[in-house]
Amino acid sequence: MDSATIKIFLVHGDPKRLRTAELSNWTGKGVAGPRSELDSIISREESLKSGIYFLTGNDPETGKSALYVGEADSVGKRLKDHLEKDFWNHVVFFTSKDENLTKAHFKFLEGRLIDQAKQVGRAKLINDKSSGSKLPESDREDMEIFLEKIHQLLPVLGVEVLVPQISKIEGESETQILYCEIKGINAKGQLTPNGFVIFAGSQAVINERPSTDKYPWASNLRQKLMDDGILITKSDFLLFKKAAEFSSPSAAAAVVKGGQANGLTSWKDKDGNTLKSLESK
Image 1 (cartoon, rainbow, N blue to C red):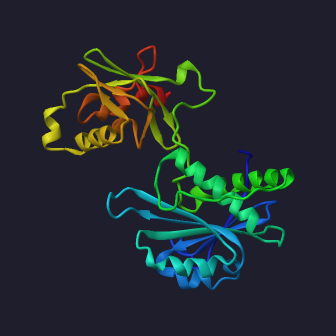
Image 2 (cartoon, one colour):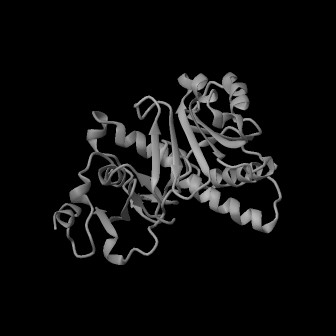
Image 3 (spheres, rainbow, N blue to C red):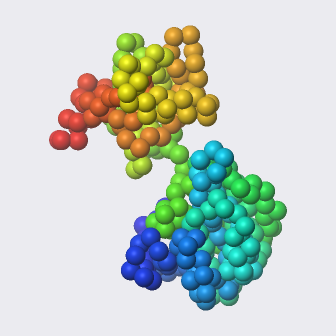
């Protein structure tokens, strides 16, 4: 993505409450806020326009992140209809500051965003079907630019469910790759903007450490990865069938080693330098 200057306005001075977001030299505008302030959100002039909106929260059955992507001629009116859904606690919507975008444009965006959310797989999609919309070639190119701006602003407004899960940082050299080894088990990964990623093909021990009886979070995390099909059992080790992203190097190392681990000393470069020593240089 291109570099950008973002203007955030905190309507009440609180970053968790109603706020708006704009990018320099962009005709779009984002509005975000908690469900508890829906009345204030839909009373804004922007909510009277056509737009694309995101409802985020947690699925009550699984506890996993949940997402609803929709479009509407009048965003505010449509948001009222979603009060019967109890999963969401936060809303973000985007409109255009001019009158050039129509329902067809936003239906096109809805289709693209739903497809992207499926591909990323960070959240359960409450609505996973969209008719989309066919647009002239020039309009499609304009909407791809609009889509890029949405992706720039969504994380700033507290929505990260569309941020791609990194399998490997493009352009990174072998010198940035880190290794974790224990009892002949080998894992490979990299630091990421969100924490740490373990690459597909890496291994983890089968047997967990006794410490998991007292501190079960590592065991719970391993079980979740197995439930999601990311970790699979081989004869004498666990295999990462897919890349997995973790909140920290320690969380990643704990999965590999089967219990609490210090990620700063567990992960090393090809020359045996620990992550701790590399970061201190």
